Amino acid sequence: MVAWKRQLILFGGFHESTRDYIYYNDVYAFNLDTFTWSKLSPLGTGPTPRSGCQMSVTPQGSIVIYGGYSKQRVKKDVDKGTQHSDMFLLKSEEGREGRWIWTRINPSGAKPTPRSGFSVAVAPNHQTLLFGGVCDEEEEESLEGDFLNDLHFYDAIKNRWFAGQLKGPKSEKRKRRRGPKAEPLGADKPECGGPSTLAPLEVVREVVAEDGTVVTIKQVLSAPGLVGQPQSDEDESPEEAGSPAVEPSPRSNAMLAVKHGRLYLYGGMFEAGDRQVTLSDLYCLDLHKMDEWTALVEADPETQEWLETDSEDSDVGEGAEGGEEDEEDSGEDSGEDSGEEEGEPQHPLVMPGEQFTDYLPRTEQYWVRLARDDAGPDAKEKRVLKIAHVMAKTFFDDSA
Image (tube, rainbow, N blue to C red):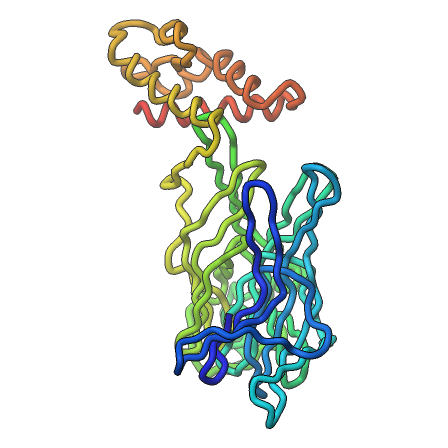
């Protein structure tokens, strides 16, 4: 939905029930003076039914519809999704109030790859910006998502897409150009051909659920590019010049807002296996400078809580909590045999003053059995062992 003059224009969407679903491509207008809805019937061929598309108003007063997602049933209990990448223009006919017309347009430039779940905001120069999303890779009965964190701009006046390239922080190299030619000792040139060869850093954090599912959260720290950037008269320290630029991790459905030329990005979600992970980090980007993202609130996986949704996961969560109650009632019991009558696992207790380096060898076989049951018979031993160690460490830290 967008605001257009004294109206709100709404397009498409979907409705899903327990047995069926339907996608729409209809257009409605809400009059802000009379507070009434009316259905529009634009001329021409418009977008096919879809939801989650980009919708923005151009400087010329037209409405742009880009992308979106829809699905259709190919056979019983099997649906096929479509990620749309087409673009349409909805324009009000001059001199004919209430008459609209659809036109399909084909913009040039660096177009975004097909995706859904992307986020949209309007930049200060009236360009529409698009961030992230997910590209679903579907097979007949499986679905995997490739989550994105790239930035694109659409210029409606030029009808062209632009990739949102960050310039990176100002470099110490440019600062030296404005100073005397003589350089102090140790001010060597960058090795291996300069900044273009700097490889991005990848920070990996792992979160483990009560049932042993390991979720890996990756954050890419890209080295700043120094080529082709405008010079600046402001001085800065070498620490600032050489620090890597932080960017939001890949995600879909992030919240965007623009205020005083700054883009604010909050949260979103990504998937790890059958689990959905929601994010609560907050970033800021100066759209005038386009230099680097600033992390206002960083993600903290340790504070995340798993909200189980199905009966199997709920049983696991209740079993873990029940184990703690049995722990109090069993007194000096070892914990490995208690709770078996009700089928609730009781993890091996941590002895007073015991270190993890001692606890893991003593209980490793227990955690490996638990991890193997959770990972399934087809899981590789290396993965089973990794899950077992993470589960043991999590339980040990919680006990401590």
